[in-house]
Amino acid sequence: MTDRPAPAVLPSSLRATLGLIAGLAASVVVLLGVLYAGHSEPGTVDRWIIRPTADSVRPPWRYVALAADFLGEPVGAATLIVAIVTGCLLLRRPRAALFVVAGAGLAVGTATLLKHLVGRTIHGADNLSYPSGHTAFLTALALVAALLATGRLGLGRTAGTSLVLAAALVAGAAMGWAQVVLGAHYPTDALGGWCTALALVPATAWLVDRTANRMTGRTPGRTTDAARPEPGSR
Image 1: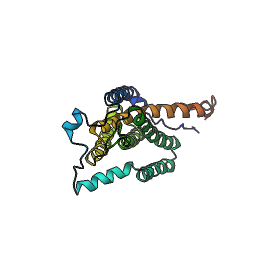
Image 2 (image 1 turned 45 degrees about the horizontal axis):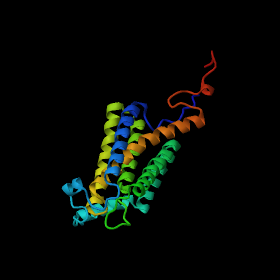
Image 3 (image 1 turned 180 degrees about the vertical axis):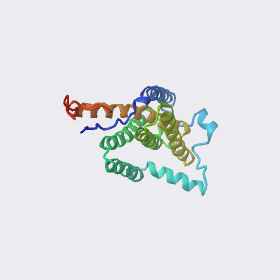
Image 4 (image 1 turned 135 degrees about the vertical axis):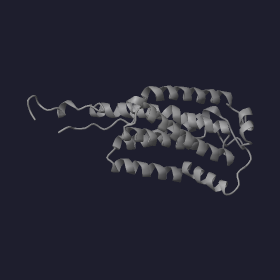
């Protein structure tokens, strides 16, 4: 019998590409953070896109925006996490379940920390805005799901990268749009949240794989020494 190791949550075919994307995203997060540190007004790019301090969306699109916003609130976010983690455990993928929690948790935690470091505000001094934690959360969750799907389906580098980036773009755009039209964030806050997730999720996946492999003494995709048949045996 072969003792199959748990599959990696970061497919090896995507490591180099996502590593480069993560580095670029981190640079954008830092650049925007420095540019808007301590600001309390929309920047030039923000004004060009939309006037973010006004509630500019009306029904029925307002209901869509509120529904998207709910997914980033504690109850909505917890519901999503529990549902995905439960699915991973039912499929006997504890490493994937850990990745879901770690990926989303680190994205939100980092966004919260950056808000206090950057100090950008909207609608008053108590409303820290950069980067958008809602956007970071939903983008991170979409990235996690896409990475797990890539490994599950055995997609190659091109197809896997396309799936991961498309999922991140759709989730980030949807939540970013909701946050901006509801007046909760500036457009550049949403961009910062999106890039925060892009920077952290691949690194989190690599760390989860590395930690799990060290704990089990296994390498994904290889048979352990203990499972190898003795010479001459069948």
